[in-house]
Image 1 (cartoon, rainbow, N blue to C red):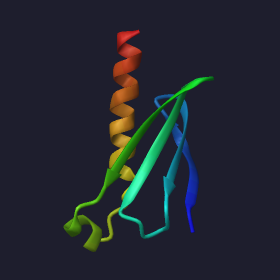
Image 2: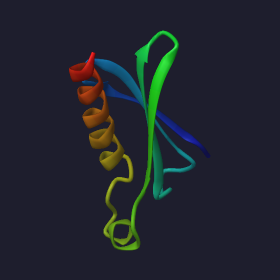
Image 3: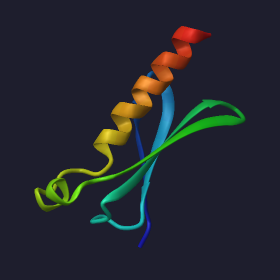
Length: 75
């Protein structure tokens, strides 16, 4: 069953995560940066990280934070 989670804001912008299931090694993080615009970061855990039980959404949150911070610095 698909899993959608509202997460803490990223760089002050609203964010959500999506996975096909709780154990899915792939996760997509979406950050709303304006009424009509959002950024999307998708990532998949490697086999070792998946076996270690790491959260597949954490890397996407970090990358999304870097992207949004860079966009803010460039505006």
